[in-house]
Image (cartoon, rainbow, N blue to C red; front, top):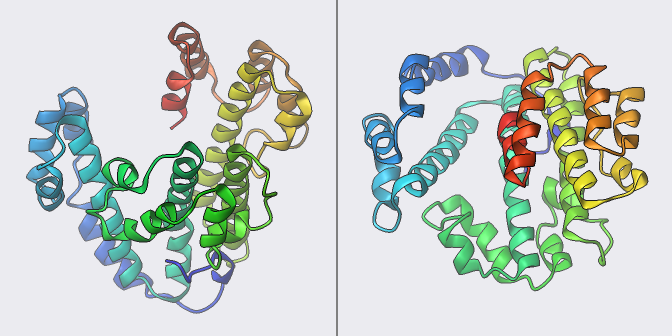
Length: 299
C-alpha cells in the first residue's frame, strides 16, 4: 500500500460487482452474533480452539511455538487481518480500490506510531518483533527495518519519506515530542480520508460516519488525558482533530476550554452523543486510576 494515496480516490472505475460477491463470500465465514457473544464469555484457550476451526489455523500454528493464551489469539487475529486486507486490496480495482484504501491505510498509520514509540522509548527492533510487530508477518519487515536503523524520531520520520504517513510527519519540528508526531499522523490520516471520500463523487455515508465518530472518540480521549496531565486550554485546543460528528464548531471549542472532567461531560451532554455509558466508564476510570475503561468503551 506504499504507493496508494487517498487523494487519488476519485480516479478510475471499479470492479464493484465482482468485489462485492467475493466480499460477501468472506463475510459468510465470519462468526454470527450469537457465537461471537458466547466466545466473549470464554477464556483465551477456548477462543483459540474455536477460531482454529475457522480461517485462523495457519496463523495460530505460526505463533503457537512462542505464544499462548490471549497473546496467541491477538497475534493470530492481527496477522489474519493483515492477510485479509492485502487480499481484498488485491481483488479491488480502480476507484473501488482507492475507497477501500481509506480504511486499509489506517493500519499503516498505526504501525508508523508503533515504530515511533519504539524509537522514542529505546525499544529494540528485536523486542518490537517479539511483541507489537511480529516478524512472522512479512508486512512488518519494512517497519522493523525502520526501527532497527533509526536512533531518533527525526531518523524514523526521514525513513518513512515517500509514504502518506511519512508526509504527515515530514514537517514536524526535529525537537518535537512523540505526542506531536502522533497528533500529526492522526490529523493527516483523518483529513486525507475524509477529503478523499467527499471528493469521490459518491456519498460513502457509512464510512464517513464511522470516521467522524472515531474522530469524536479520539478527541474525547485526548482531552481527558490532557486534563489529567494538567495541559493548558491552548495545548488542549492544538491537539484536537477537526471533522468530528458530534463535536464541531462551537462545541469543539467549548470542549477544549473545559477545565475539568465534569465540565467536559457537560459539553458532551449538549451534543447529540449518548453519554450515559461514557459517564459510567469515566467513573470506573477514576476508580481504576487510568483511562482504560474509557478507551475500551470508545474503541
